[in-house]
Length: 392
Image 1 (cartoon, helix red, strand yellow):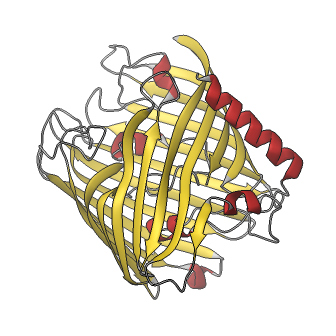
Image 2 (cartoon, rainbow, N blue to C red):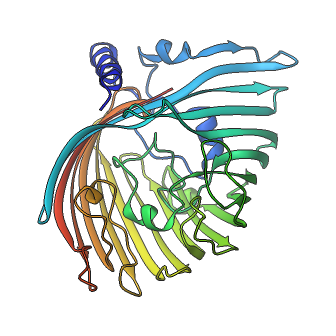
Image 3 (cartoon, helix red, strand yellow):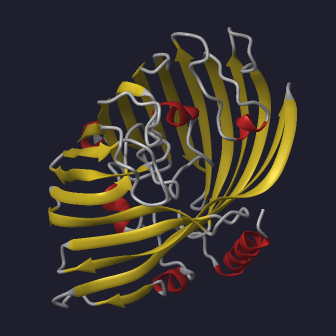
């Protein structure tokens, strides 16, 4: 682990613990626009004393200007420390899970331009890849057109920014069925109208590179429609959403996507203020030797105080044939083998120092993978992970 990342993380956490008030501001404007549904978090009660630090990232802001309305620096630093104890091996490490930096500009009151890159703090070349490299024109709240490399949002965790996850990492449902490269070049159209929201786009498949990709293996199409159920259920926020992905060209060289031709997901997000629940059910039709599979996630959460939140998760995965499932990120430390039936239980605490922009998380995971092929995919073990999440 690069000591630069550790030093930055320690400095930010120390500053927060001495200055922060624990209140949670609303999500950043670009996060609200780009995600079908916002992640639940404690509601803002008063401005945090840390807000001037984040406001300093906005280098220019003039809503009345004819051309440049806003220019700000954006990025994130996510640090993880994990300790793993399993039947087939142990492991522990401190890692820079994500490090990104870039800039975002708003022009002509309707045009957004966003350029951001992954940085490797683990010993490789500093510039790892472009994540966001797009322009977006907002016609109205009901219509936003985005072109370039940007996040592909489907499934529960796949449609949630890594800054706003209630668990330390995305579920193994997303790891298996979502396109974990996350950012792909394409064109999408999204918006909200009344109780409905939608997001549809066409994206390039093929091989990735550090830029926009090779554009050498067809395309995939995403359609997502959500309906607001908050009033009907009498809660602060509730959305039921259906996602569908069609991947048109099986190609073994494609690494923007997983080898599934059809993927469908039904997603529920519910926020009652002090408590909430998120969940999804996903089914996928594999090709190129990938088995069909199904998965489900259930994620209840409870606000213990304005800044302390308890979150739990149960994950279920099953593939039709042998070796159709992958283990989660840190479970792969002990084996890269695959299995056909997976269960996971997670329990964790989130401490919001400055909302999702600065928070500390810790969680304990138990996972079990069955491997009928008996070729190295069987797994049972515990992982304790602690994390610092900083975004601006």
